[in-house]
Amino acid sequence: MMDNYLSYQCLSEDWEKMYTVTPHQKGVEAVPVVKQRCQANARERDRTQNSVNMAFNTLRLLIPTEPPDRKLSKIEILRLAGSYITHLDNQLYTGDVEQPCLQTKDGDNRSTSLCTFCWSAVKKDNNSTTTGHIYKTPF
DNA sequence: TAGGCCATCTGGTCCT
DNA sequence: AGGACCAGATGGCCTA
Image (cartoon, rainbow, N blue to C red; front, side):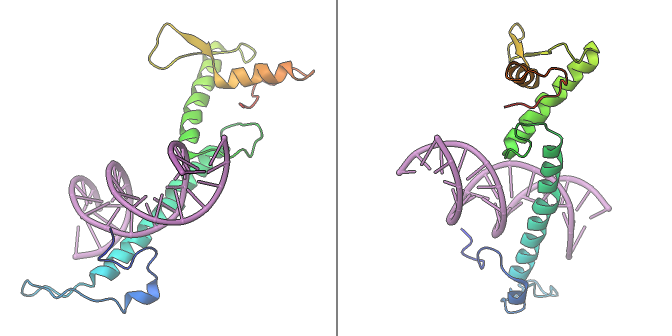
């Protein structure tokens, strides 16, 4: 793989030195394909770092965990975000933040369990003398 | 050391 | 035509 290119993270200062492809079609300007490829790579890098990862970080901040700065993988962020939305939706529906909400297990409409976020609240309540705030953090 | 996770590269497709 | 978006491939790092 990448035999035709200069491998990872080709730097902009190298671009001008890169070879160009001789055009076979008449009237087509020679295109510095490697430079073009490196520019595309840079854009893609920038997009994943500043767009995709930023979105993951923003979403991560909205998910309560214990400890709050617990490292979550991207797939964990997505799954927990879904669970948390369901949790909030249940509380909104019942109108009772003290009432633990139940969630349906994947693919099984008959089987329910305490949702992740309520479960963590129960665990935390059992481990402390204070009661009250429902938005305890999972784990 | 195997497996999970991630960053990066790459080529294809779609959009402007 | 060029850029954005996407999914697959690859290799490096980390941890159990």
